[in-house]
Structures are given as C-alpha cells and as structure tokens.
Image 1 (cartoon, rainbow, N blue to C red):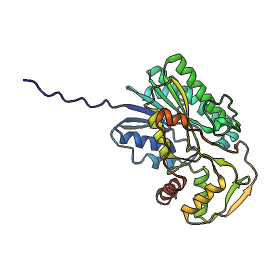
Image 2: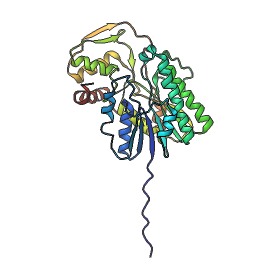
Image 3: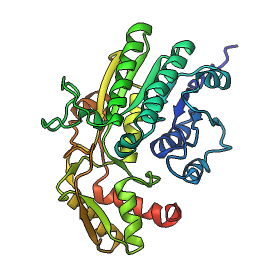
Image 4: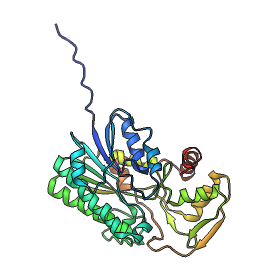
Length: 330
C-alpha cells in the first residue's frame, strides 16, 4: 500500500534584529512575525529619546510566539554571545546612535555605538556563521555631493557630520567581513524615513506636536532645503526584500522615495493632513545639515523589486492618525 507523502512545511527562518524596539526596527519585526519568522530583537532602550516610546513599540510583540526581546547593548559582544543561541539565518543591524545634530554634540558616543557596535554584531555573525547581514545605512553618507539624484556607484562620499562618517565606517566594515569571511552584506541607505512611531526628535514629529499645541515651528534656513521623504512601510518592504537578495556578496542600495521635496512643501502637506496652519519662526542654517537628499532607486528597483507606493500626503495622514491615538503623549 502506497501512502500519500505530505509536503514538508517550509523551514522557519530566524532573524536577529538589532534596534528592534526602535522606529524602523519595530515595524520590521511586525512584518517578519506576520510572515512566520522567528525574531530575536535586541535593544538597550538607550535614553536618546524616552524609553516608554520604545516600550509602546514592542507592547504588541512581547509574548507572541516566535518573538524574544533581549535588552543588551550591541557593543557588549560577550553579552550577545551568552544570550543568543541557536541558528540565525540573517541579521538586520539597525541599532545606532541616530541623528546628525546629536553626533555634533557627542561624536565619541556616535563613534562607539555606530562603529564599535557594528563591528561587534559583525563579529557575532562571523562566529555564528550567519550567511546574510543587512545593514541600515543612511543617505547622510553622500554629504554635500551636488550630483543628484545620488547613485550608489558615486565614488566620492563627502560626509559632513560624525553620524555620516560612522555610517561610512559601517559600510566599510561590512566590506571587510564579506570579503574575508564570505557572508553576504547588504547595506541599505535610508532616506528621511517618516511614519507612525517616528522618533520624536525628527522634524515631522516635532512640527506636528507643536502645531497641535498651537506653538510656532522652527525652520532652519529659508525652507528651500529638499529631502527624499520615504514612508516607513516602503522602507520595511525594501529591507524585507533585501533578506532574500542572493546576487552580489557585497552590495549597497538606496532606499528612498525617488524624489526630493522642499521643506516648505513638506510643511504644507503636514498642514493639509493636520487641518491647521503652522506658525513659522526662521533661524540660521544648522551645522551638519545638507542642502538636499535625493535617491536614485533604480538599483533597488531592479534587484529587490523595490517600489515605494506611499505618497507624502498618504504617509502624513497615517502618521497623523497614529499621533492622535498613540503618539500624542510621547
């Protein structure tokens, strides 16, 4: 008698996500859990911004099957070694000391967390023979490069802040580990990410809070700086696609919206979704800020199938809805 052979279920993949309680990291964890991944999230709940904001980000994840949260500093390699067991199919390294302005105030902290922390997680990947490493880099690495839109093949990077320099260092460390130890390293240069759970120090979040309170917003310069504003859901789709990337051993890709929007137009879109006008105070240019960011996303489109689908107004409306329900107390 011949029995019916049932197909085996696909093997469950396990990802380590550093910075897993943060803005982008918590959204990525939601996506991976929804697809049946096991996720080990690492976050040290750094007081760069209020801890309770990150606690809210993970409140629906804690206790879910396949999810574990480790409160560890990524610079502490011995603690990572001790706490993380079992097979890891991929690492997504998003933990960082963010922010250009913060890096000007404390460049040594930025260097420690962003460079030493990246080296620590890469070393863990080497020891555990993790085959796939996705690194959250930044558009800030391009610095004051006037040749827009920015392409990954641009040979000259001109970072103008310690934060930007630390991200260049992370990319270079990844090249070393990929070359020496054979792991696949995908560096994703994020462009001005916004949406629900956005960090409170970022412009859209700060402006919206001030508008709700009837306070003036501060604009640095004349309002003509331009940014490639990218919705967090689109970024997460790009990161998720990068986990399946299987071409070059080492590669860099831009993840942006693919167009540059002036600060004045961003404020106008925010006014539209908030239903109120912003009172504006102007001040001088901020050191470390670049005049524009603009991503050429043709490589990510071709190699990841990446396609940003969220318009600025749609993304702003989603941010507003989150702010009015969950984020207003932050």
